[in-house]
Image 1 (spheres, rainbow, N blue to C red):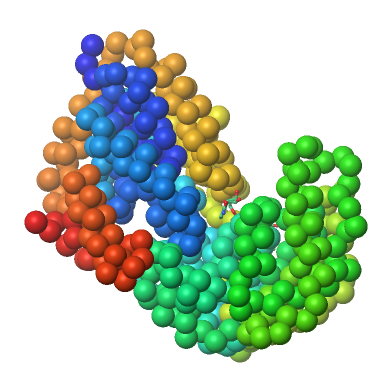
Image 2: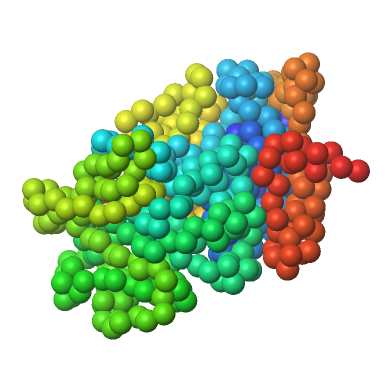
Length: 441
Ligand code: NAP
């Protein structure tokens, strides 16, 4: 029986977990991990907050997957540009789409396209050094920033804006973002949830971190907080909500917080209605909501806050390439429990939507790998050319592929650049820098 030829599109955690599972369980599988960037690791590199270095230690495990004998990394290869989706389907026995969700959802309110308004996807990609977002250069000069959303991404953004240079010293926040944050002279950050404190998506560890920022005073009107958590929540959710509520009650009870230069205002039950300004955002209009049985409704009562910068952290959509079945309503790859069409599968945020941390994606990827194994392990007709044909096409098209050795060079050079500043790494943030580092002798 010939080898099973597998292409995984996207080398973030989901794609790497699928590759790991398939390489362990299908001894004859050849796996090509294709990524549009010259760097693997997806959101671990481009999404996880630069001051959450402990989360990034999982990269060592992923490096072992990338270094396996029958796994190849093909970076700087974009499906839809360098090779089409239909070509992949004809070349490989199995194609697994793990492209994540990179496009910011829109708030759908007037003023969203004013200067000074950004999505968290673009903002996080910018401070984490993704080449696509390198020139975003968000305006942070107005003193006041509104962050919309009550998930952990919103908290990441608030925390990074709130930290001092010293508090960011051990992070791998890119230099361009460090300089911008240092020059920002912020006075007020508004954290805006359209529902109540019990409905927030953030988790206690991340919420607690906001309470420890040395230059941030927390302004939270205790009248926004319920006295206790309702009885009818499932146990796991109840534990999270109780801890969140205890932290928020602690924040609300803080007296005067002298000597702090930034005020962090928690606003719950406040839905964005419009962003106001001539060409650039300068105020935000919000409407009070009330939540009954988990559903929020507008009350008609509106108010305004001053905000020269607005960052929406309200979730993401996937970005399909031509020919890929797509569920436009949900912004995900069209699929039935991971099956897209014969021989094509999907895993991760592009399959389920943008929720869940890395371990949740591991569980999802393992389930999809099991589907593939069930469908293919006994099949004899493996007649696809796979890697050889992809290599031929890429050579013919003059594509500059960055392989695992190239990534290892980028990685080592970035770590060396960081070491000279006593930081974990200093990333290359432009395509030409990344390609040059990968090609260095
Ligand atoms: P999320 O947890 O789903 O939060 C999205 C937030 O946006 C919710 O509060 C949602 O409110 C709000 N929202 C949606 N549409 C809105 C609108 N039109 N106007 C105002 N608010 C709106 O998503 P996320 O923060 O993007 O995080 C994605 C996943 O990554 C989550 O599973 C998260 O836990 C994970 N993550 C984890 C970490 C960490 O562990 N440190 C860090 C970052 C991300 P409603 O609830 O009312 O819809």
